[in-house]
Length: 609
Image 1 (tube, rainbow, N blue to C red):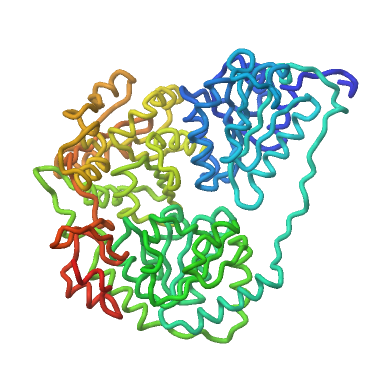
Image 2 (cartoon, rainbow, N blue to C red):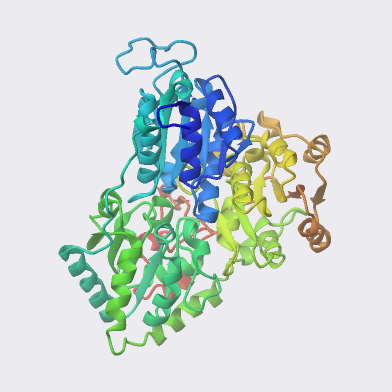
């Protein structure tokens, strides 16, 4: 074809997707993206995965990237097609997951920022303005010659710095326009810098000095390390330092949970042992974790009270948000920081041994196991924490696990031990119910239609139930576990805590019901199993793990089972309510046990409980 021959913009975009290495897009066809669907399919490089709700597309692209490190795109039509994708965009924004959203829109004669009308043409509206505060880059393409440029620029922004979603809106007439190849503009990315400036270099030196001087140092490692492509540097760092580390929920799968220097996950729903290690440390170096409230609790003055805390984050706002409690706020890419840290440590002849501190950490683990007395079965139902522990024994060497919210999220992230080569993914920022099944789709396609274990709950299943058909259509080997607890268990606990007057909108009796999932599985043509008692567990799990296609396994649990341990509001004898410090999780330990576990004794607030 001669450079002066005209070619459809949609075809140029399909070619650009290939040049960008985007092998999969997830979406639903509509008038606003029909030209793109046709061109992508005809070009033959990028596969379109047709889902049944756009929010599923915008969720699937996240785990796709987290699985194989390659971008995928959500391909949305105009109107409700693009508004449906916003939940996934906000989720990717919160968890710093790069993804590309290509949204169609009405004819460009209607889609201009100065248009004062509520609706632009038929179903049109200002989608770029809608996502402006929850995306790294958003742009409406008004000229066909700029379409490829904006796609390339969007991909650059998605991956550069702190990653996140980008939104490229392309009106339908621009997609259909014909232009010459030599008129196509291309984006040239600026040269990235991977070096430390003098100020950050000094901060690294200070952190090294603090690590050497501390008696009870602690590393707190987050998913920002994986986003920087530096997860393989964690083990060498730990072995060089010889000191304990904790991981964030999003970072659990960066290093083997059984590594002798990894001591679990601290937080509001943390493990007791991990919280005691955090709260008794004297220096905390947090790398690539944003230290959200579920990690640090509600009162910063009570966080690691004996410790200096330094934070490393690529985002200036995140690095400084706890400035009232932190000493150094180091704005730096986690991978660049780890390189600088390791190079300085390698130059040192010897580092102080931390044997006494490590022995204390191991003693906490032995005294406060992840699954303990508070996880006893109740009322003839299996406790979900104990079930999760049993399920863990059936994991395959390369097991990939995604979770929805509620029981699947809490029990999974408190109990599951993830080995090298296994993965565990969820939505930790937005925490949207309905995430699990679309997330499993993303993982499966990223792994060439590979196997995924999806941990879900009855309530969350109903949020994206339609994607069962996507799973069936492609015969994806997704092992879907559904914890049946009659509705919304976490909100039942919230209602019990706040009102003590019965439930509203959280179970069958109060207005919310879920279907018989066995019958539902039959309708979709999916084999299904049910587990109600311990003597059914191992044999059933073996069958589920042996399945080569879609399979559903429903696990029945007590409809009011507690999530524990957790940081809870506690009532004093006089009836007043108090939120304890992070080490004082519920169910509360005997006061003498807590006092002995804290090297400087228990907090004054805890003495009153």
